[in-house]
Length: 478
Ligand code: HEM
Image 1 (cartoon, rainbow, N blue to C red):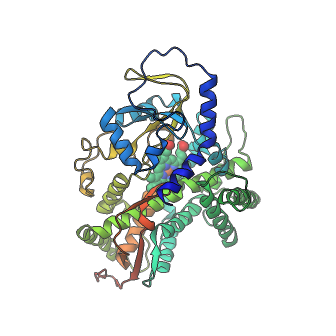
Image 2: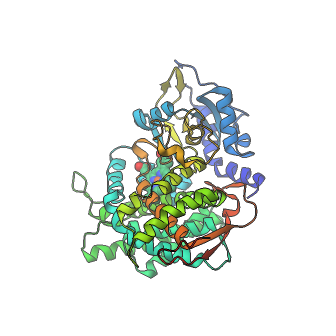
Image 3: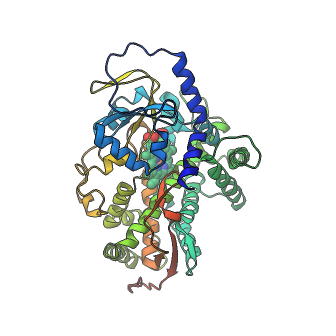
């Protein structure tokens, strides 16, 4: 998508929000303001600074603002007044200590597409209940049993890329992270259900960021239909699981067996919305980071050799056909630092959105009720005060733990990512098999970034992969 088309899509996408903000603005009087609004510019009437934000790299916009106004500033984008926060203390204030004053906020069309009962749209009792269930199924004790299956998915994915043909790395990583998501949610799932879920999920994924319209043939309209079919497929899977009467420890099992204090179980729709929500939260995020990791390793031969040495040592210590153990994945020290540094450098979730549910005062500034609030993770991750020489890819910086609240690739507080351990585990496993048995070359000079919506290397990092022999004891990767 070129920049002009990008701007148009974003403006159109948020048009309903824009109109409702205009309506509210003309029909409500603001209460007497005690504190002053943060510094910053609100741009043009109604359009605000949306065009400035989307006509350039969004990170340039955020950084320029921070340089000019400091850690807290106001702006007006996508039809809504916003306060942006670029310091660890401010992010903690919004996400942790005063989280009850800031609710999650998403465009209605996106909420409908994923499913309104998905946990990340909620606060309070329902959110806490769902979060406990999802977090429990994704905790280290639950996911360690998935290692052999994740390895099988990894090996099959890598084998399909090998042979020297050009592969769109990001697209392939999306398929991989989808398969791992399916494992975490369902354990084993029969092939027909899996294929049907995959086919329809990818149509939903394609339409999710397009302009919401009911015109047949548009990506959004197709996505709405595919979302309905997803609901039906999930309903079949849920009925079959209920008939089996076995208590599984996967996410579906936990959702099916949950009862609240009054003994109420979750409805099938609530379960389906949360399954789609987890798949959605798990897929593009992990795939984007993995794509960046392949680029960073490819661009730093010395580092790649060191990672290969670490992984080959583990590979050689395993008997023929023995799978990785949990302990081995915990001992991939350098590879783990590469993942942490990739998460910092790429900061694929550059910021998050909340909405103030009341007038809130922060350091003498007013955050008015109804305003959007955006903690800027990327600005914090790229602040030289916390990460010296921030543009340098340097995994060794993680030999020392970052200062508290300065490193938030998985967010912070009540909505922080419950899938972070699974994401790291699947990345470790993929890197292990990749560097011990394959080599890869990136096609062309790849320096650009594309946003879709997460930042990924230009064109999804086209690359060629070859299998190399690595009989145990032989250093096979050229
Ligand atoms: C590298 C990969 C990933 C990254 C960078 C990432 C990042 C994040 C971040 C920053 C949030 C918080 C958003 C906010 O506060 O608004 C979040 C929430 C969430 N993530 Fe992840 N995530 C990743 C992978 C996963 C995986 C693999 C799963 C599940 C299998 C998952 C499930 C979720 C869920 C369910 C939430 C919502 C939690 C809530 O609202 O309580 N994520 N993620």
